[in-house]
Image (cartoon, rainbow, N blue to C red; front, top):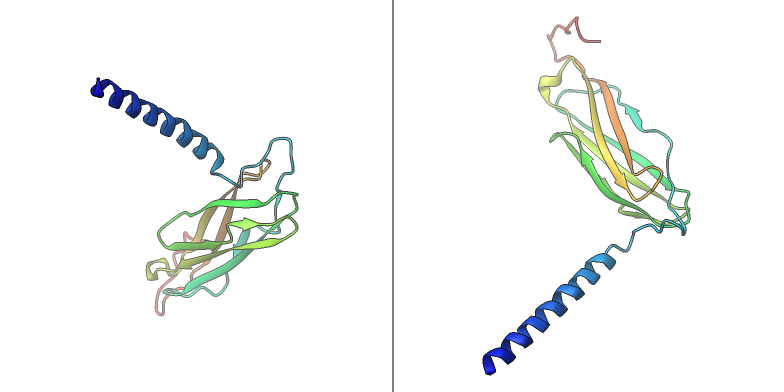
Length: 154
């Protein structure tokens, strides 16, 4: 008899935890956008930056400014640099009417001397009209002292 009562209690507790856990998981994302209510609107002046005077072994740093012209919080869900040479720091939430930033840093390897480079960073947001943008930093790395530039490169 005790065995049946313990089994019934454990089953009830497990069922309750499963139902509650599912409800909590559904409500845990506070920056979700309502399909009918206020929406965020991601606006950025430029998706690209042309770096100048790039020296081998240097660090390129650029700040992209993102504005929220919408009526709901703009959430930058993830920012993904395209390679291991890049790091990005960013504002996760941008209030309506405010601006935020995505700082991208690129470590310029010595092996890139005399070459054109182009590095991308992907930004994922909760803007229903623009859920993903690609930021690009490009430029020509100076040739190392005594290096002859590659004639096949721009």
